[in-house]
Length: 72
Image (cartoon, rainbow, N blue to C red; front, side, top):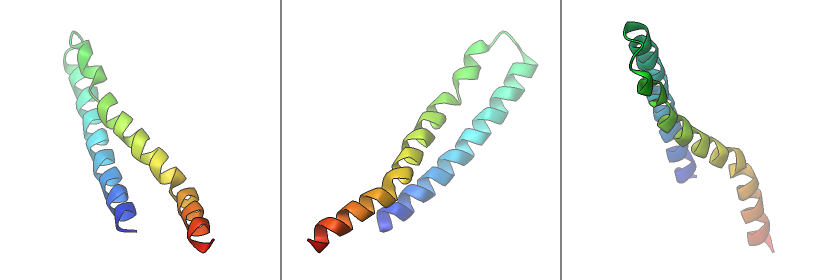
């Protein structure tokens, strides 16, 4: 259960980083449109969020599977 709590906390922190990078990108693109590579900055936190989100999505199923194995 402690690892689940840690993953959720990490997911929250990464989501805040993602929001900050989105705001930074929006501001950077309005100031100077020649810096197109800045639009790719939010992708790294987004991929991390996808990974942790998918893990948390399957967490209840993994817990049920473990409970069935320990019951047998």
